[in-house]
Amino acid sequence: MRTVTGCDSNSKMIRPLITNIQRYSLQDGPGIRTTIFFKGCPLRCPWCHNPETQLVLPEVNYNAEICSGCAKCAEHCPTGATYIEGEGADSLLRFDRTKCIGCGECVSACLTGARELIGQSLTIDEIVKEAVADRLFFINSAGGVTISGGDPLYFPHFTLELAKRLINEDVHLALETAAFCSWTYLEQLVEYIDLFLIDIKTMDAAKYKEHIKGDLGVILKNLENLLEKKASVRVRLPIVPDFNDSMNDFEAYVNYFGQLRGKIASVDILPFHSYGEKKYQFLGRSEEYQFRNVPNMSYKPIKVLVDMLTKVGFIPGVSITVGGLIGVITK
Ligand code: SF4
Ligand code: SF4
Image (cartoon, rainbow, N blue to C red; front, side, top):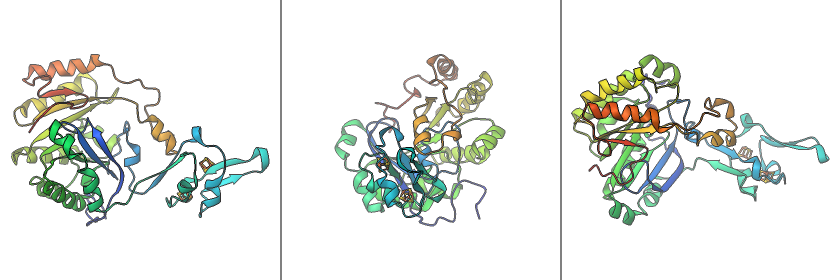
């Protein structure tokens, strides 16, 4: 049975699948970093640009643009999820995802790279080895490793064990989360995480519940608890057209975070972009994406928020950033 929060409390040491261990990452904390992306998230942001990290089970990416139509995938599929419909010149390659078990047979059979299995099962040893391979870059740029997702706190026990192992490797360790979880889990992590990156998606609790499926009260309480424990926290605000970019939204941010000035390291403003749109298509989930043809956000509304935060004492380039955190050192 699920608890009221996003933590998968039944997932005692359940090992999440990993969608990517991305080297040379510049937007997931200070300096040059390696980011570990867990597959699985309790929330559903309608603008999510990493939809492959939402579901816990493996998924197959299919890129029809580079498919040669050889049908090798259908020959190897054990469940009939990928199959040929019709005969001869009229035959069509079909993919019934409801029958797909994520075995990856079609991916191995595909010679063009049109198919890719999303979600690798890796041990903690394997993750740590890959994550610290760029240690030299971390040292030279004040970077490190970021545990991200999905949401790592959906797998709190695994995240804690991974954090303990990574901190023994003597790297700067950041954790990116929406903080929609039990405080018990976050509290245990304070000792091991150098920097928390906490996403706040709106200050409107009803909107949070309706559109994102989370509880803003739990999230803000966790944020305040972290600050009380003197954890280093950067707050991240995704700004999304017609969702949280009105003056009312901005005023709510400024009122709340203005009171936390001096306690939070920074407010990082993340303007909406639509780079994830293709990913939905490749996952066969295009209908889920509500921001089709919505252009990337311009700087004009973002500047309004920057100015408002500046008026209450935040400093652009120091305690306010826009976009990534390239070159910003916080610890
Ligand atoms: S992953 Fe396995 S079940 Fe799914 S389409 Fe490919 S071969 Fe078939
Ligand atoms: S094996 Fe690859 S290239 Fe051949 S039909 Fe399947 S997806 Fe297309």
